[in-house]
Amino acid sequence: MEQKEDMHLIQIAQSGDDDAFTELFQRHYSFLYKYLLKLTLEEEMCNDLAQETMMKCYTNLSSFKGNSKFSTWMISIASRLYIDTIRKREREKKKTTRLLHALSRQLTFRSSSNRLEWSDTFTDFNQLSAETRTPILLRHYYGYTYEEIGNMLGLKEGTVKSRVHNGIKAIRKEWDHDE
Image 1 (cartoon, rainbow, N blue to C red):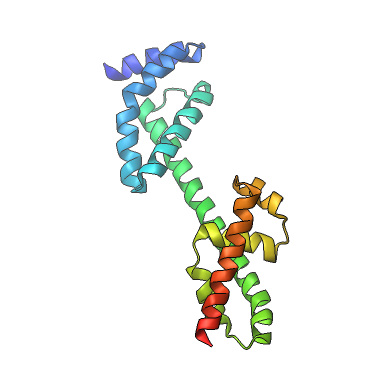
Image 2: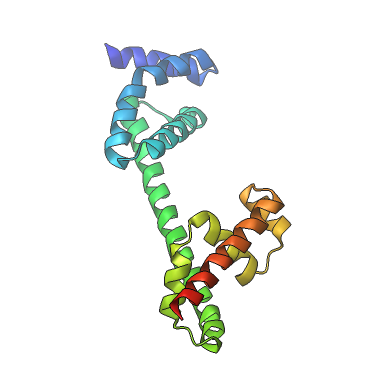
């Protein structure tokens, strides 16, 4: 019975009735949410994926042919979105690792002239918060201006300057403390 009701709502939604799609999605949202929460183990990611799944279902509803239940089709979309998200995270993680290695080469040169070991420099740099490390990396390794960094990170230029300044100051303080 429920599948017949779903098919009826799908047909109406495919003809352009947004209310029918809303009702259809509301009927299956709890199932989708529980599935994604178990899959991701992260509430924020679960919410993001649920929203992306809804949008994907809405934009691709015309491709639903009824060969499976709507919930099965919806879960397959959610699963693919999850896999894509994990792959994206892995790519970003690898990119960050490459950036840190590149930064380490540059800092090794600089720190060797100051007779510091890179492992010490990296440890000190790594102890800074991500909010501080990111602007330092963008400024001193990539050469972005404070204004450009502010635009990238959605921060005021003064905030970027203070984070860079305070971060470098903290690293120097550690270096002075170690000597």
